[in-house]
Length: 583
Image (tube, rainbow, N blue to C red):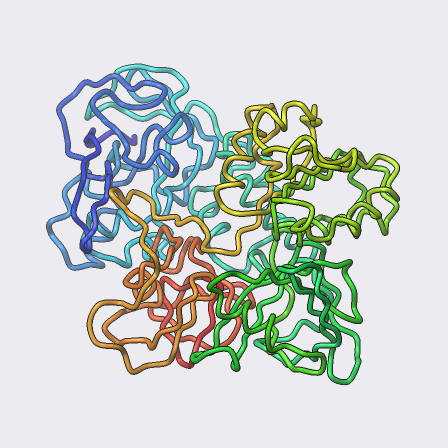
């Protein structure tokens, strides 16, 4: 009969780690009990990162004595006392390959339901002093699992564990874990997994994404969603066919192939990455939205001249028709999906942020869309309102088009068109528009503007999950558990420059030689204070997956599942050649 060997608890605390501080509750220690197990926690216990641990779905973490015995032999260690893996319940029995998602168990006065395998994060490796532990748990099919509390009650070490109900489809914890983290997935198993009501919403969503990717035969995380065949690797030369001044500050650049062959047709909202060897050394790299209707004959990007912008000044003062630019394939997931969606859409922008949503407006107009389409844009003045006539003509062709433009530096007495309002676009101005709360929003502009607009829209009742934003700067970091982080401008790492391949972080505007002082590209990026995204740091979770525009890498350790085509797992990669990363 399975039974509870050890009841372990611990409150979150700050722990030093690699020169940083991690707030974590993984330090658990045995207690005599009995203790009350409640819906969200065990009395006296806590989790430091509620995004990945804890809550009603992950209230109790379970690990087995048999797995302790395995790791003692595998790691050659005799110091693995119960609670060391961060579990609340150390149990005798309940192996991961026999316990099913959805199984219910009675322990003491309480009843529990299995909801998901352990989340693979770096903290278990930190606790054990074995950085590769997250990958080892998955590779050896010994992750452990979480309980949801069905009935609150007291438990104590020594209590018997009785299964009261099996889970739907009887899919084991080990099977579900491998289905998410390992390659060669079985589609039938994926379909069964999403049909298990006890499985946590996050894991269900991940499996739905895998099913959707399988249905479209595209790899999850591919950097070019929806793109046509013919996408090219790295950079290729495209010829400047035309250069058009939209106003005093914005220049549109039209690009075509040298031999006039068709280009891959992008999706509206995607962008181009451009490398400019003539502008500076090393060659600067910039991202520019495609601003016209998707086309296979030419691309249009539109560049605002910045007061101290090296690249924008170069393009405005030196670029002429016939010049060649080095261009990477269209990419990005800030796109207007194709299909028969009839829900309202709001295209919301500020300044040069108009470019990707203008491409979306072109697509909607070309399709003669009958959707309720709201165009909301803000500029300083009529003189700085880029594409005003183009957008107005497109909106006039739509049956249900709504145009609202705000000029922040125009007075109420100015001779303005009926679609223009003087003043600032803020919460009150949005509220006055009576926007449909069921709309999908595409939002682009300066960071502060997008933050303010997102907050205002959600306060007005729009669904935050339907508000999509485009960021050309660094993406928000995902560094679970780290505290006291202050973000600095990316810079060269401390110490003498490296002598290895050059690594370009395109979103951070930084190109530097690699140094073997760092174990991975992720560690190098962190030393440069480039915002990064990670969780396991061992090639399991793919949180760090980053589009790679050029170059090759090697892996040490090798990830359990390869990165999607066109991407790299920076947490376990080292450069073989010069790299250009969308980071």
